[in-house]
Image (cartoon, rainbow over the protein chains, first blue to last red):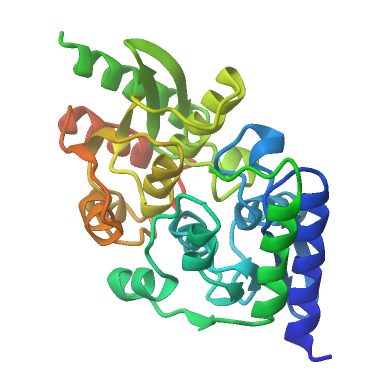
Length: 157
Length: 157
């Protein structure tokens, strides 16, 4: 298994753990210098916090753990393309490399009220350089959505 | 004093309280049906949390207080135009009316590494309707930046 698959599988497993606890089907991991810095699933329902997406939660975890705001050189692995909120949070944290599985359109298809602006559009409009890798383990990431939809408590927002 | 000035002044006072505690010069208030739901200053340094902008902090506060994700009909007052992260968070929370004082370009001028995408651009690109009111008490909101810059501990990110 290559390095990137390995970290994305971790994010997928975290997303599934979240779904098992009644959360929505999103997971994210932050890796720096080959080491895991943070890993989180979406916690929006659990915390009554509309901002507690997997990526935002991982960024907070990283900040607390490393006592730093900036994660230059880190890589974000997300089971779904970060929404514009999460993409902008990555910008603030100076994360420039993002791997994701499913796309924003997939999340919208499953009922999430996504602001449909792709990561590439955000980068172009904001004139920043991002290294974006779409579709990593896409099939497995989409399966998380299916597991979620099959669960009794599933509820989009 | 009109209603909107009144709530913006509250956000300004909150921002100044934050600056007095070594935080950055941003404040936000969320109002629904004429009542204050949440009010926060930026807490990024205090919490080592790059996502703890004033608006995000106010949204989290509102979620905890009301135990709801959605704030339909609420108004956000922010001393500075919400960055794309905060604007997208408002979208998730279904807040469609935003009053702000200073602009993203002002924050960039004071050294903040803003992703320079205006709220109007975000709305246009995402094809959503927002009621945006720029420049409310702009002079007072800019003064908060000046107070911050004159403080010993000031540090942008």
